[in-house]
Length: 490
Image (cartoon, rainbow, N blue to C red; front, side, top):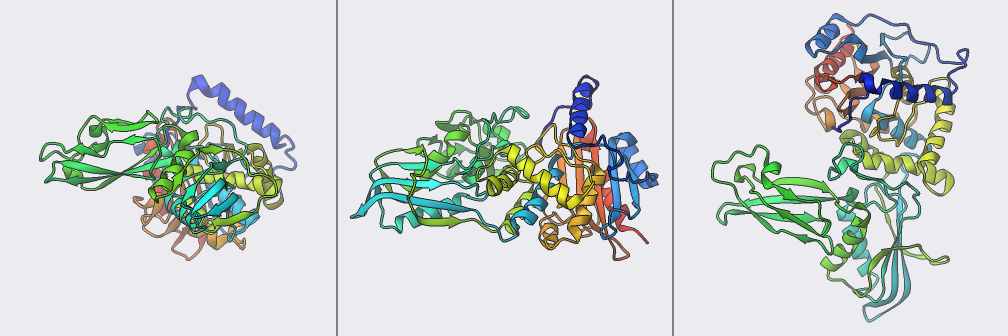
């Protein structure tokens, strides 16, 4: 659910073709003798043609491949249409990242966040600094930050006569402008990766109406030090429909030092939750750490600042993340962009000792070459699909899913995917409920899905379908029709 300017417009066609040409040169596609054999094109089924017509989408907007999951690269495709063309897959690119991580890191892989104490503890006071060393944990959410602070207090510390130092040097990523992609800097999906990623760099506001008092109370999580936050907002007139309740609040969220509301909250909404990305992403971790420490009754004489753990210091304790197998479920079922980028960068961190996007792309390239043979290398960009430049062919992605089907990590990968009509980003799918495990992707000009469909015959098929078009937002019924068609093989 991300916004992307139309990259297939004529004005942008030259730039888009330039990206594709550069990519093909990079991966060595000029050697056609070694290229993966193209799947012969097959006619689109009549119901898919009809669905495209109803959506006012041309046939050329769709790239699709359906093939037996266990068939191998030589098995004939059941359906192949424009399957060799590089397309923007949006969040379907997360399939590549999560499968690569499951194979390279292992399903049981965990991220550690060590905490160091410099100085001595006496009578409840630490005379020295606390160091928190981020190592890329994608799920260091508010509840686990609370646990970290409780464990710090468990060291006998109530007062820190010094600083809390945040070591984020494990990731070397470029400065990030959260408004650059689509002009929506306060949307959580635009958050940037961070070695010490706390609560996805986002706050959650919970609105609870109190009709007797004529107001809604607002709870903010996590607590942020130094941020003034309005505690209540007036209720709308009786009978006001819920509708665009966020717009009705007239929220003032751009100031890093305060949060306010100039509007009203409709009582008919009941309790609602609004996640918002930090107005000051770089300073969010420091505010969250200090805010949580003080909320638990801790005192701090110094400040929370960035720095590096001194050489030779040993951890006092370590906070451990959930296993990768759980993390990839969050990434794929709910299409969490910043978690996907954390996982992607971890490929480089484990290989090189420091995480960069170039290092992650190189780790992916080496893995792809060893596992996918001559299947065309995807242009993964940031590994999340939040990109104008990411590209993959339907045929290459289908081949990857065939390889994954016979991989030891297949159960973890499949379990991470949304189930059609049941959960995740496919819970509202109009296809037959429970017949498919598929990753979805959407940008303004992209609608895509890829994964596995359980057919009437008992066979499993790989389905990859990508629509790149200015009217891609209308393509959901087309994709639902493809799921149903794939499931009907008898």
